[in-house]
Image 1: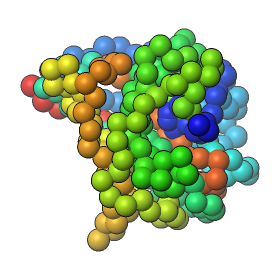
Image 2: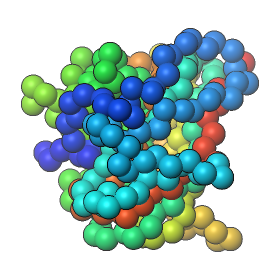
Image 3: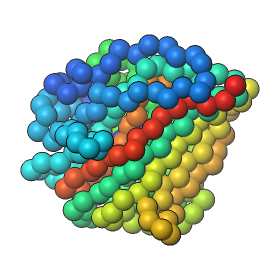
Amino acid sequence: MKKFLFIGLFLGVANFGGAQATAPSPTPIASAGTDLPVSGWCVMGAKDLKFGPKEEGGKIIFSGEGFGAKGRNLAAFFPATEIGEGQTLKMKANVRFVGVAGTGNFRYGLFRKLSRDHSRGWLGYCAYAGLDKAFPKGALLARFPGNDGDFSGMKDAKSQEAARNLGDSLTGIKTVKDGAYVVVLSLKKSGGTVEIESSMDGAGDVPTPMVRYSAKDSTPATSSFDALGFVTHEVLSSDSIEFSEVSLNLQGP
């Protein structure tokens, strides 16, 4: 099965350079009702700030000459957070694409990075929006424990399976085009299960559903998270990607 470019969300990445070095050291957070700070935005594997991010007016913008030449792995980080029983970790963000070419897919997820350089062993969940021949009905992916890959591929460095599919989209798949979208992903811990709810809708007065997922993972590899991951596939070229109104909070008892 072909590799992805946001879980393995998406290419094999070797080491962090420049931008990645700014990622904060995670600190455990246990109490619910907490809004978690998100920082350290970067292009995975980039050794400079050629593609940003540029932050202005509450927006995080990735762009620049050659940015859309291939897919990109984008990430941001937050303090390591353990989801307690009955608690929900919820991420919401506005994402705008400009200069889209091709009919590839966009992936977004919540993860726990395990390696010191943040490049390998990512655990967590990734949702697909847009088109992929390997997943014509979309996919909600869960990373296998023990994988040594980044969050962008279905195979790890040893060519072993890196993720499993928890289910198809509940809505028909639509092509990602220029414009703004609202992305939501929530993880709730209940007993030994993690319940995942996710959606990506076109923004506007009448939102257009892109994908919608609902699944339960009875064998979760982790209930602790510290990273957001976003990916454009190689054939979804976008001249720029803009994030705004990004929120992440821990809800529940």
